[in-house]
Image (cartoon, rainbow over all chains, first blue to last red; front, side, top):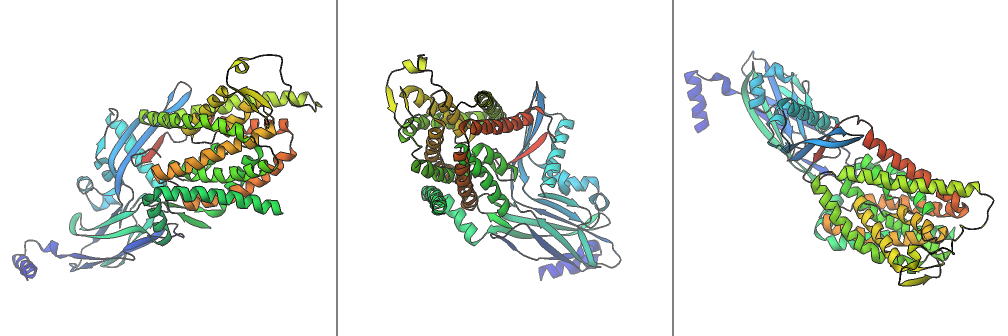
Length: 253
Length: 307
C-alpha cells in the first residue's frame, strides 16, 4: 500500500518518472553442486525489465562475484644470475571469481567516474581492493601489479570482462551466461544486475547462488577435516594394501 | 575422462594422472628411489595445489615402496637392521627439517631455496654418479664388484659403536649411519621428498654397500618415512586427497613392479649411469627455472599460505 502510494505520488509530481523501472531476475540454477563429474559449468541469467518506459535504449551490466580472500602478486627480478621473487603486492581482499558482462563495453554505458564509484569491471574492483604494501610502490609500479593480477586471473578463467556478454532477446528481456571454471571456490556468489538508460542507472537488482560440494565429495572433505587421525591411518593402510596387492598380483603371473 | 578431486578441489584427467604415476612408479622400482622429486613438479604442473600434491603423493610413494620392499625381501636383498639405524636418525632430521621449512617460508624465499637445493643436490650427486659409472664402464670387462679399499682406515672407520650388518656386508660405526639418516630426513622434509636419490649413492659410495641391497634398504626406509608423512599431512593440514592418492597408487604400484623387474636385468653401473642422467636432467630443469628469464615475471598466490 505504502509503495503504491509513493509511486502514485511520484507519478503525480512527475518529478522522477525515470525510477519506475524494475528488474526481475532468474538464474538457471541457484545452487551449483560439485560432484565427481564436475568440470566447470555454465549458469544462465535471465532478466526482464518491468515498467519500461517506451523509447529508451537500455543497457545492462551484470557483475558476478565469488567469495573474497587475500591475494598476493609477486614479481621475479634478476639478482646476479638468478631470477628470484622480489617485489610483492598484497591485496587483502579480492574476489576469487569475477565476471563483468555487459550489453556494450562498459565505457559506452557509464561514465569513467561511475565505473570506479560503482566498482564496475575488473580494473575498478582490483584497484578498489583493500591492500597492504609489503614494499613501497610507485603509482606506475602499482598499476603493473594490478595489470598482472587481472591478466593472470583472466588467463586462469576465473575473471572475465565481456562487453558483449549480455544479449537482449526482446526489447525488455535479456540473457547472460556466467562461465564457472573447473577449479572454482566454494561458497556464496552474488550477481549484481544494473540497468542503465543513457548513462543513468534506472534499476538495480541482486540475485545469489551457492557453489557446494555434494555426496561423496562432501563426505570425503568432511571426514578429512574432522576425523584427521582416522583418515590419515586409513590412507596409510590403503597404501600398504595397494602395494601388497600389486606385489601379489604380479607374483602369480 | 575427468574426475573431480574432493580435497584438491579441481577436476583432473584420470588417464593422464595414472600414466604419470605409471612412469614415475617404474623409475621408482628401477632405482629404488621414491620418485617424489619427479612427481611433485608434475602434479603442480597440472594445477594441483602444492600442499595437496606433496601430501597425496606420500601414500603413493609408500605403496610403490612397499611393493618394492616385498620384492627385495623375497630376493633377500634388504637389510632391515641397516634400515632401522638409518630411520633412527631420520626421525630427528625430519623434525629439524619441518622447523627449517617453516622458518624459510616465513622469510619468504622458500621457492628459491628449494630450487637451489635441488640444483646443488641433484647436480652434485648426478655428476658424481655419472663420472663413477662411466669410469666403471670404461674398465670393462671387470666382472668383480667395486673394489674395497680395506687397507685404508678413513675417519668413518675409526668411529666407535661399530656394528656388523651381515646382509650389507659392512662393519661400521652406527654414528655416521644415524647422521646420514638425519641428513636425508632433514632434506626430505625441506624438499618434500623421500630422499632415496641421496641415500642410494651415499650408501653405495661412502659405505660400499652392494647396490642390490642398497635399493631394497632404501625402499624400506622410504616406506616407513612416507607412511608417517601420510598420517602427519592428514593430521596437520587435512591435505591428503583420497581420490588423487588412489589414482597415483594404481599407476605407481604397477609401474614399480615393472621397474623392479627391469632393474634386476640391468647391471649396477648401467643403473647408476641412467640414474645419474635422470638426476642431472631434473637438476638442469630447476637450474633453467632459476636462471632463464621467466616467460611471465608475475605470479599470483591465493589465500594466506603460499601454494
